[in-house]
Image 1 (cartoon, helix red, strand yellow):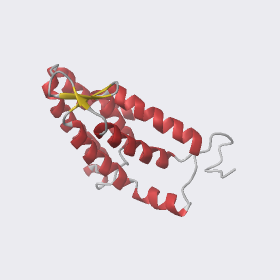
Image 2 (cartoon, one colour):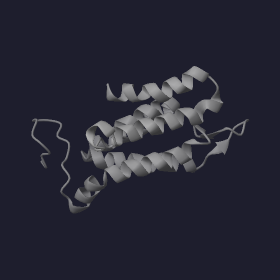
Image 3 (cartoon, rainbow, N blue to C red):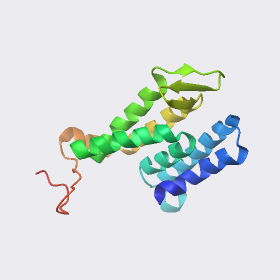
Length: 163
C-alpha cells in the first residue's frame, strides 16, 4: 500500500503529459513525495526513512531499474538478514548503475546502462534521494558497525534471533 501511494504522484505527473520531457517534473514530484514522507509537517517533521517511498517513485519513472534494485535488496536480505545493510548496498548499486557504463541513445535526453534507460536528470535526483536515505539510516549504520543491528527473523517469530 505504501509503495503504491508513492507511485501515484510521479506516475501521474509522468502519464498526464505522455512526453519524455516531463520526466524532470515527475522526478521533482517524486522528490517532494519522498521529502513529505521523511519530514511530514503533521508529525513534527519526524517521518519514515524513505525507502519504500523512493522505490514507489522509481517504479513510476524507471520500472526496470526499480525492480533490479528490489532484487538486490531481497537477495541480500535473504543472505545476510540485515534489511538496513541490504538497503545501503542497493543505494550504492543505484549510484553505480546510474553513473557507470552509460551511453547515450539516438537522442541526447536518455542514456542507457545495459537494459535500463535513464533520463539525464535521474543521476542528480538519485544523489539527492540516496543521500537523504543514507542520512535517515545513520543510526542503523552505527548499529551495523557496532554489531548491534537486529537481524530479520524468518522463522519462529522471535525478534532478531542471532541463531
